[in-house]
Length: 273
Ligand SMILES: Cc1cc2nc3c(=O)[nH]c(=O)nc-3n(C[C@H](O)[C@H](O)[C@H](O)COP(=O)(O)OP(=O)(O)OC[C@H]3O[C@@H](n4cnc5c(N)ncnc54)[C@H](O)[C@@H]3O)c2cc1C
Image (cartoon, rainbow, N blue to C red; front, top):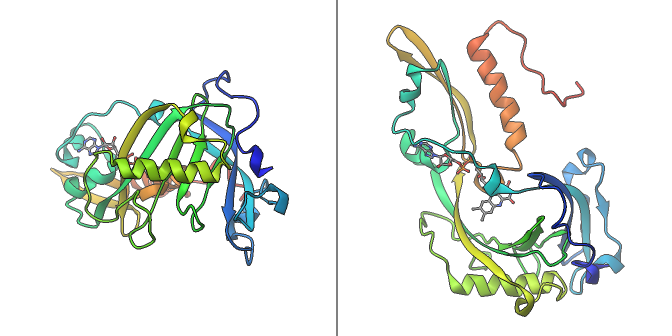
């Protein structure tokens, strides 16, 4: 099954949904001692059979995960130089400026986590594969409708070239990293995504807005006689899309407590509680 990693119908003709469910496979070079702690909230979680694993891998699982078409999701934004600029129009301001909070909030705990990815033309691949600790450490590919994202993330000291932790603000492409990503993806796809067959559409470098911990809290300001509130929601590093909905629910609660302090706390729409 692993050898079929990228077979199957191309999804390029599918409707252009910006957030889509996809089978997401993760492989491990050793047997897992236990299922991940989040298994109970992922009904689709399934441990892979040995015949579903590529060579050199001993264990793995598959879940139905969400893949996001990020560029299309980004809306137009206007630059602000001080959060208080927004107080003229609003009583509550939600600060989601990511790495910009380093200056807007004078927050030295925010730092860039540099990442390089390749965007290649879709070739009929319909899955997501990643390796976080095996022989292709931190290599991954994510199949989208019209393209496939190839990447690799590495934390300083673990070994790959793809990301440097710390104050690396360079958004220049590193050619050696590109080669490294292609090599890892070729291995992870069991040769189905071979460098010679791939049409590289773009090589991109981004700075993840990392922080020692996510800042999700309310801050009160006096604005003349009025009280204004800023709700900070930044510092999500490499998991901003993953945690976006949960953080948004928390932000809603904080907005509610700022505007309607006596109201019952907000209950998430999807909560069964
Ligand atoms: C290569 C790479 C791969 C990634 N893969 C994943 C993944 O698979 N899953 C996942 O969950 N996350 C992933 N991430 C991380 C994810 O992109 C971030 O966590 C997420 O974008 C953070 O969202 P944010 O809105 O907080 O910050 P950002 O996306 O950085 O948005 C902040 C916005 O604020 C704007 N801004 C900043 N300062 C100002 C200002 N003064 N005035 C006006 N606007 C301002 C910026 O222009 C920007 O548009 C990846 C990141 C990279 C770089």
